[in-house]
Image 1 (cartoon, rainbow, N blue to C red):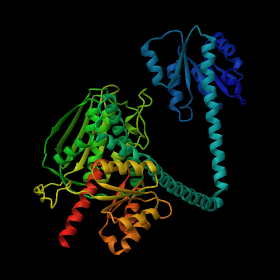
Image 2 (cartoon, rainbow, N blue to C red):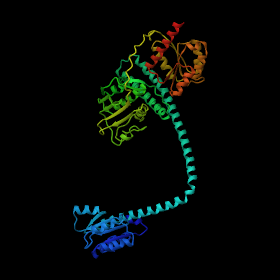
Image 3 (spheres, one colour):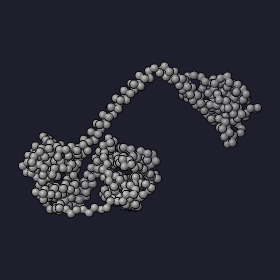
Image 4 (tube, one colour):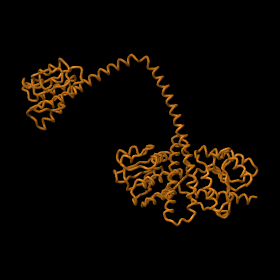
Length: 554
């Protein structure tokens, strides 16, 4: 079925040639299109036909006596009414590149050469006819739309009101869905942290034990790395949610460029070492200052370093640079990895973007690390960009942050001598958690560290043990049965002896409101699960110092 078969309205086609035999051949070839074929034997006749009717396409012989095809085409397209009519030139002579260009400048849409191939001519004319019909139908539709719009003017206000109501309902539904999404993310983080806690504690127990077999040591290191990685994913997911809701707060302070570099390298060194990459550092303007949240600035650069390490073959090279450009501090992370396509660059910093899927590289993570980097950089008044020469040619990420010019770096503060050595005391520690694995693993870790430990698995049992045993430190899970951790803390603080207890909330809930609830209930500290050995040692160190200060005062 040809293209013209669907056309239900006949249109006019103008055939212009001074030779009757060729006109007859055109008519024979185009008869199957079912359109009105109108002939003219000169340029003058063609112009007369155009004044009498509308035409979808003109088939125009180039070599005609008197007014040739080029002159005829020029006169046709000089007239505003005819300037959009497509012209197909027919030529048996003058078939040079110069003539073709001349014809196109005069408005030709195509050329056919003599002898004519019927199928080619029929196909070209058919396409132009169908375009003409579609254009005319579109004009008809536009007129209909204009008429319809004129009759609907009186209903616009009511329709707009209905649309506004629908939009308000849709926005309310979106807000509700967004709230449910944030609640789901918080619950997901909590549920992920609960099993992570005993895994983290078990790995720390293993780290304190001698493991002779090399494969067991390898297995411990794998669990350690992957637990850290999973904890970071959970934290990133929550950070994105906080930023989108505008609840994240920056604790800003003045930091030197060198301080930011050193802390970021320390945070990213494990994954760089695990992939056996070489890290090259080039730092200028070490003592220049920026104002920002140290945790978040380290998170920005360590995320970029982690990203570089993930998408590069083993034993690659990562270049970390810091420099000053005008009023900005500029950090860049350049790798020799799999690179980026030009199509991937615009969506690189979008949330949940996984740009390497199409290149055959299986992505790791949730696709939120770079989105989080951009959001944190923008919260600091900066920008982040990415460039890449192409696939397998590496990539470079550049972070620009405003400099705090004219400010001298803070003088180093000498640490005060500790009142009492952190490891000099054996503490009595109560651990409370309704998760048996979390309870046993954390208790075992504390016992290996030399402390006396008791355990409780619900709020009532915890309150009873605290009252009877009076420990130095209590590590309480929040979501315990019978009495939750908040209620246990409030009841402890109401007792005369409760003020001396160092009380730590250990929970899978880690939103800012959770930290505030813990503080309001009387907890000294709030830690998100899982607690690693360094964090645990820090908790016990604080408890020992508090105990020493209380002893001195008494």
